Length: 554
Image 1 (cartoon, rainbow, N blue to C red):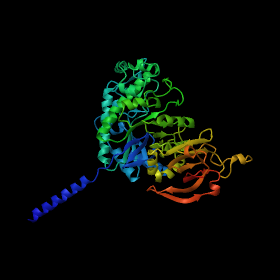
Image 2: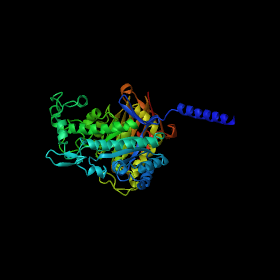
Image 3: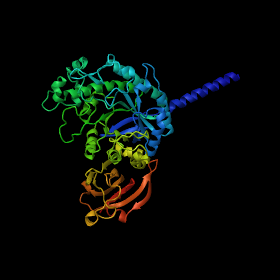
């Protein structure tokens, strides 16, 4: 009798546990959502702002990770972008080793860091360096592209069926493993598929399979997303439709289709957001974009062919620019060209020299999903001249100051960005004033100002504040109400004037609070600015500062 009772009790307890488990909702996977052309990366069910750092290419080994975590901690980052190399997880065909991935995920949790994994598979910076040796030295099974003159290219062909099958198999195995070890914790929030794809020096593959495909009609989905140049045929072969652009556009379609096969298979087993990154071409903002002339990587997701990626790779959420052009006009143009109604803005790589830190305000203010300077670890490898000369805390410091003020408010800021409330600007190389148009108000921005007084009345004073020898100013603004704003910035003067319904009305600051947001998104006031601190506009100092501003008219 006792045995029966015990068994009944055990069965009842088991049913209760199962019922409780069934009643508990499964954790929501990270995803990207869009509304009215604005986007959010949802993590744990709420918008998340990636304050990231990307590790050096060769820091993807357990013994190297301590120097990565140290730099990310100093940077006040919340996300690490780091490679997972095909050669690393499948050194021998069919035999997978996920020891590094396990260690990476475990340590990320210990450091309270999210992960964006970078799949270095068939292509990394256009080449096969991170493919396993059994792939990259077997041209017969895994063919390289053939150039127009018949020479073999360095780049693996997007028409290599065995290459695609092998890459896809490895990527699916990786995604299955991440699901197995991380589905309940969601440490990994996004995956980059391949890295800076395309081909330098060769417009496309001229091998037999590629030539046969080039002679076929352009797919209807591509035509719908990438209209023919003016005066060209509305349908037909790639040459007939796209003329001088045909080689680049065809190669773009071939690579994007290859990536789609891999991304689709990976998301079928674990549906994380996925993206591609781009080694930039020169931005052409207010003029026609010229055809490829061996001046950038043909086939990559450059701003002019995002439409082809949308058509050929629907399982890729966005194409992101890798910004290593330090000139402010090129940064601004690039951000504008990549931020489209159909393409969320995120900067997955950026130079880590000090001059790039001011662009964080512009990027975050424009409503980006996030940003990640490259080389944020202490691996004693300098990225100069594309990045910083320093490999210690001096490299991290300019970004750490900015991340520090955004870190506690990253969730609320990401929510404002998703609602289309945010704006951003960075000091230009010309140091000239700028105007940011908002809803009913303009923000007039100027740089190298006195905190007290106007230069036009102090003509005998021609000195500038220490630390302003090079452009370093920036501001991100969230309009949280009709007349209310949150400003985050440094080395900048901000004045607000009415436009639209407020045009012509006398206006003044009703209240200017300095403070910060706590981890729950609650505003904590530290002091109220008035008098000298507001008579000459809002002069944000070298230390990044957060202000909550309310305007009034009379």
